[in-house]
Amino acid sequence: MANHKSALKKIRQDEVRRMRNKAYKTRLKHVVKAVETAISEQNKEVAEKALSEAISVIDSTASKGVIHRNKASRKKSRLSKKVNAIPASA
Image (cartoon, rainbow, N blue to C red; front, side, top):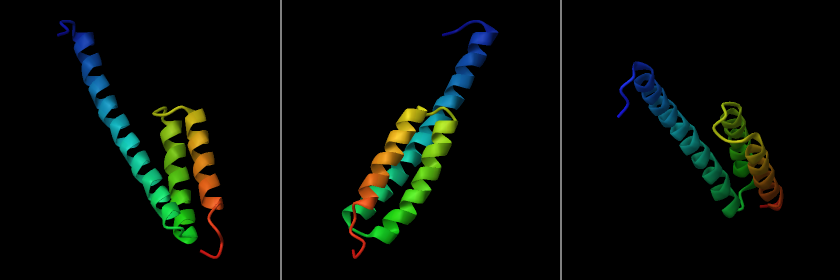
């Protein structure tokens, strides 16, 4: 355990940041799963709506530095590709 005042403060800050990052990552996983569920059901309208929300969450997560911007871009691209592959008549 740390003895210095600054080290104790750093431990507290790290814990707060860890919990915040965990919340962002959990939110990210939920929105991505919502998109993938809509894709598996072949429901284009719901998938597009979920995708727009997912893109917003992915961008905010990347802007806060929780995930890398390239990872965010890759996630958005792959999800968009899957949603666009759903037939329009479905």
